[in-house]
Length: 314
Image (cartoon, rainbow, N blue to C red; front, top):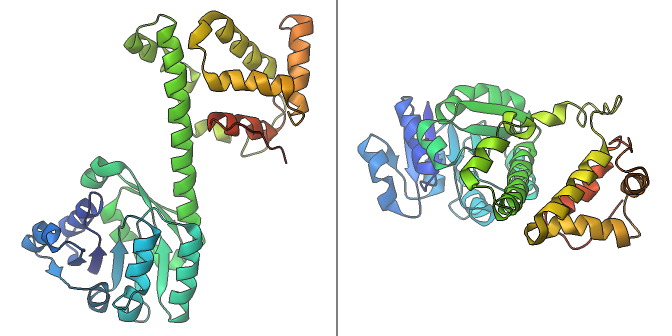
């Protein structure tokens, strides 16, 4: 198939090369012509503008730094929208704004052109080895038509939903990763300061419930299906874990955990569930059985993980 690729940076260079390995005919463009040399040497054709790339191909991909660059390549004076043939498709592989991709989609649709968002996840190594997830939003029929081309870029293309859904999935994935990494940095610092050797601590906790399953697997147990009965976990257990940690770790105790207790003690907007659990815990010496029965607990945990200084409960 005749394929265009614009943006031959850290990720794009490898994804474009994998398209050549899969025997697709390739037309390329980048703001730095020299980075296209490996692709041209392997048989790709260089074009001076995005428009010229679009005029030559059936489908075009962009892998760009962000929304500003995507909009310029799509709508600029020599942009894709001016060169694509009716019925051609454009997949944006960039980490992009859902609002921008939806606006571009409407403009392209007016010209009978197909635009889909398809951000990737897997990093530079995944781009080289084709171990990539592609989260695609847009017309399902167009996704199916070009699925063999997507398969050449990554081993896990997945149709998420309407236009913008792929970008939303990417942002959810990345934000979750940042929050989790922040939390892990804090709790591991706590453990090491409390006297446990770092590698030994890592080997221990990765065999626990959290370490044995993939990050998002637990969501299918209760939160996604909305099944909270019978309760699987007692909030009093979570709170007493924090109490034990605070009493046993001293100065090593993470600041954002301390924030939980400050919120519980002083905020007028704290969820009643946590207040009830804390009161029960203090009175019954850990005999409380108040359980997580509402997904609203996320309203507390999320801002805490993000080290927010305020709590808003809707």
